[in-house]
Image (spheres, rainbow, N blue to C red):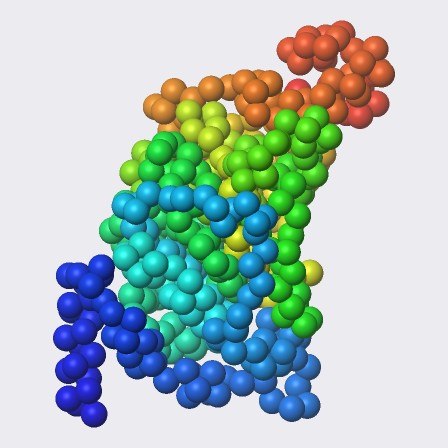
Length: 425
Ligand SMILES: [Mn+2]
């Protein structure tokens, strides 16, 4: 066994030097060096237990499915005719998790190792956000390219991701959720767009892994990220006009906001833009903050229909928020509204009255330093649909259509308390 270990070390060392020269046989040996059966059996679902209790998805079904199952290629057929540069930057893949099911975490990693050209994976960085069992993460470092970092207290998604990015060494960062499966050729389209323009932040189309059956289902490729004034994320169908303009279904879709779980960004650009707001807790709202920041500070966000990654969508979070789910979301989104939305934050406060009076800190200095554009610019150029809704409302209430004059001229708004917001925020 010790000779085997030494051999594995030599292989790992050579791998680091010469990724291009790994043979398929060597790569398979490295994958087989991980004892998957004992990893999974140590924390299996037990007959009689409710299979939803621990993870809010069907743990039993997930464990019945192999870590390397075949997936239907859900892309438009024209995607298979596209060509990508033979030299693309490699990426550090960052996966943060807290008490993830071993079966889904492993399948996320195995799908990456099985469906990505080896030389494009610089490393896979796991950040274990203080899970109950530290070996969930540690044992996985026997898989090639996988590193494990463990927080010594619960930090939440945002600070965990920053920890992962600070350790990352590749030119490009790829964030994945811990219950995903990447599909065929998922990575080259994403890296290609960033190689051409590092200010782009790109996401795959997120296919649906059914939380009950774990069936892999194609998502519509005609969606983009949208939201309402309460900063509630929603998928939006492209409008008929937008669809009419899309003559080529392989073209990127510009999106006002990303869902946040899965995306790819140039590492230098991520650092330049101020990473994440590390005062945000646990989960939620960070996708608004980074989306506004990218757009307003000179970048762009797009969804690439020829890149597909499946994700287990759940109805609730399987873990607790120490300060409560709603409070955390409000804290995180208020920080976003105060720094990035200018006077339009008033509409956020009207939609979320509970956010008034909450502490939020600020990243205003960062915004000044980066010399970013206004939220008005964002509404006019990136998400006019949100503004239109608001303007239509003003028009029906006989209000002035310029935001700055609203409260002077529009008495009808008083019934919605808008006069009051101006005073108390
Ligand atoms: Mn998720």
